[in-house]
Structures are given as C-alpha cells and as structure tokens.
Image (spheres, one colour):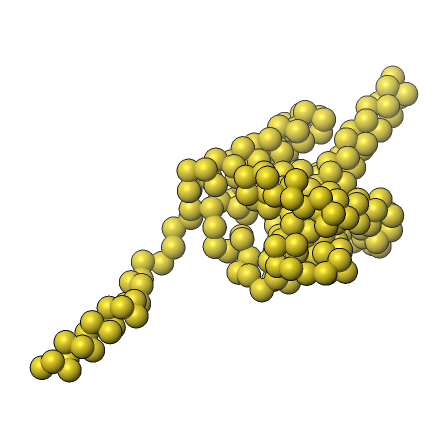
Length: 232
C-alpha cells in the first residue's frame, strides 16, 4: 500500500511539473510572439520569452519560500524558454497564421499555471485563500511583465476576463483538493475551466465593469465647435 501511495504521489508530482513547464513554454511563446511583433532583435526575443514564461512562477516561489525559484534552480525552465524563443524567431510566419496567437498561447499558459501554482502553494502549507491567490499570481505574472516590457498596458488590467479566469481555475483546484479529489483529476479540470472561460471571454467580449465616464470629444468635434464659434 505504501508503494502504491508513493507511486501515486510521484505521478501527481510529475503531472504538476509538466503543467508548470508546459505553462512556461506556452507563455514564453506568447512573449516571443509579442517581441517579434514589436521588432525586437534575437536577444530581445529571448529576454521577453524568459520573462513572460517565468515571472509568475518566480514570484510565487519567492512568496512561499521555495528558494531558489524553480526557474533558477531547474535548467528545464530556461531550456524551454529559449526553445520557444528560437522557434518563434525563426518560424514566426507559421505561428502568425494562427488567429491571435498571443492570446491563444496566453490562455493556455494561464490555465496551466494557475493550477500548478495553487497546488504548489498548498504543498508549501499555504491556506486555501492564499493558494488561490498565488495560483492567480502565477498565471498573470508573466503576462504583466511581458506587456510592460513592450510598453503596453497589461492585458490583465484592460481586457476580457483574465485574472478572474485564473482565480476560478485555481479555486477549482483548491476546492477539489479540500474535497478529496486527487491532483491528477482536479488540476486538468481546473486548467480546462480557466482556459475555456478565457477563450469564451475573448470570443464574446466579456469584461468586468469599468467606470462610467464620458469619453473626451474627438478632435473632429472640437474643430466643428471652434469653426461654429468663429462664424458667430
């Protein structure tokens, strides 16, 4: 029985490690794609893909005391980031044929990261709420750094449901674990929930409420008012 338990634990650990590295790869692809679109050189592409793929995980690991962070202590994270950057740099036209490749890779990374981050936080004895929030941070951190480095307002602050999707995916993982579900059931389901919600939000334009302020008049309207005043 003990051997069965150890074997199941190893399977779960391997699955979550695969989710973490898979999330790193697809987020790195989103970073590299954004870098190519902004005409960065090969060094800039590699920097951006590493930042996008690993910023969220590094933040999570520092906050739960898992130091050195996995992205620093495990060479696989650097390797998959560089691989994603080189694939995008040399074969960008193929990737660009996808519809909104940055958003698609971003959604996939968001789903994989939010559950991997939440489960790792639970493993380091974080409470349920803290684990949910750390799962969300793991999911959104890389996208924030990616957008800031190319001088854009981060996606999480301005677009369709993003952090909410990550939070719900992490919440499903945490809730499932507390109810007795194993990680190899709760993690894929939570990731799928997050990805589906994010993709549906993009497709249907679901947004959180924004402040109801009036947009400033366009320059054309201003010119019209100015001409009317001159004629008087």
